[in-house]
Image 1 (cartoon, rainbow, N blue to C red):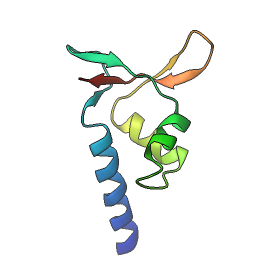
Image 2: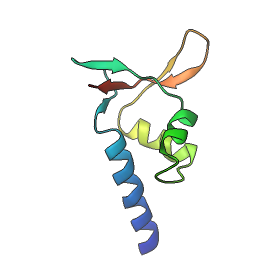
Image 3: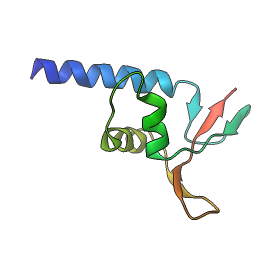
Length: 82
């Protein structure tokens, strides 16, 4: 149980760091950077082997919303603060 809690802490720290300068809503000084769960998984793979489910749960828990792109794909609405 303790090892599981530690792994969850590590995952949370990495995801929090990754999303520190990203927002689920547009804001001043932010540019859209919509990403699929697989694209996020690829971005994070050098830090931790996240599952798609773990990433999707984090996104929902932190108020990120899925949106439909013009090509019919579905991505997470993400705005990167610059």
